[in-house]
Image (tube, rainbow over all chains, first blue to last red; front, top):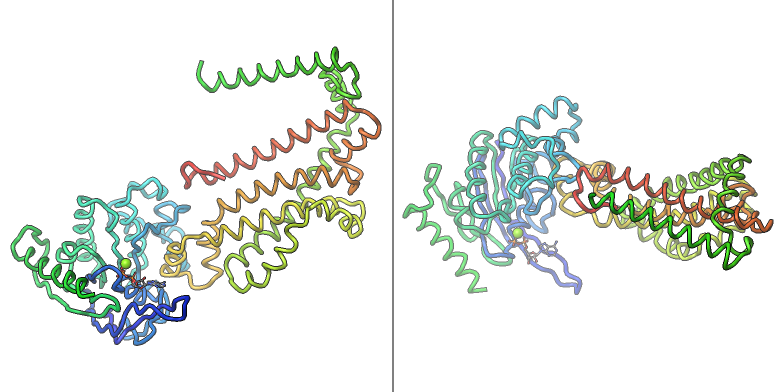
Length: 253
Length: 258
Ligand SMILES: Nc1ncnc2c1ncn2[C@@H]1O[C@H](COP(=O)(O)OP(=O)(O)O)[C@@H](O)[C@H]1O
Ligand SMILES: [Mg+2]
């Protein structure tokens, strides 16, 4: 069981002038084990902040987050994170980037490389194991970052617009690959995106956040099986519905 | 003929021409070895010095002074730079002290170097340390300040749970290029301090000391020999370091290097 329970979470960032930016207020959300959830919402509504609070990189001002019933108090390898910007360590070869978490756990060199190789194979980059990150394209770097997060065998995988910087074609391919990884590893995934199309393609449920201060505005179940057809009428309808929701809230700001 | 050999050939040709012009001016225009020793004067002085065996001893002495100063600067500069770059409190605490000490020209330490250490290798080493310490400290400090936040956070979520682990596995490797270029600057400054320290009598050996000593003896061809050796040795040290660093860093840093 690796459910995430977010109860009444609020976050205020103090500003220089003594006031505060209220990024999140009263967020309540329960994410089931092995669920794929996408967070969408107007930019600046606190998606990244919420994800970082789940990761333990940021502390909530109010409320709390539990994973698997245990409160989140700080970063933990049990919650893997894939960042929006490229986060591979440029001084480490691909294989040693993927093995980093295991190295921190004290796993021996042979063993951690074997495990890392397995995850590299899963993301289809075995032939780049000895390359340095600068030799990889943007899409490959994010695949390695995913492999690096998975190699720690986390309960939850947190992803912050991981494909945001990629071109449309690469992006679609990465989405398919991510779904296949998810099916193989059965992780709980919380995925932030500003692309509604991506959210409809990927998620079991789409969580639409309201503008700042962000809170859960609507949760939309998508019961369809995968792979999904982006060109179908149903797909277009859900996409339109979510888009309208985000637009509306943006206009009432 | 490719570009590289063309460059080499032209370089050598220019050197030969410069030497010929130097020789002509020294011999026919100036005519006094004391004011401007000619190429041949310098060459024969070089041969004599080689024969006397002091050259190697002085080079060794200078390298020893340099090595002591640089190693001390590394041993103190890197850790203090790390402390100040990573821990805010250490920064606030040490910064005022550093700011007061840094602008003092390294050579101003010579009197105290002599009083504290006497005319020893350590005294010369101390002056070089005074020159090399701050570039290393500053480079380490800013290298640590500039570690991208996302690397540190990636380190945290991947299981680094102490500052020590984060420094060792994330921040230090990320700061290595900055530290390396700081060391390179420090070596340049240190080499200059070396000559001055030895000239000002911190030691009775070394290339700088001999340069000054030969000036007192009015042996100007010898002075030129020492000048050239100082230049060459500095150049070679810099090249060796740069090549080493480039080989290490080029593997992961395409293009730009210290
Ligand atoms: N470290 C921070 N300090 C101050 N304000 C922040 C910080 N991080 C985010 N914010 C503010 O919180 C709000 C939400 O930001 P973010 O979570 O990045 O939004 P999103 O990812 O949905 O675009 C924004 O107004 C942003 O300026
Ligand atoms: Mg964001």
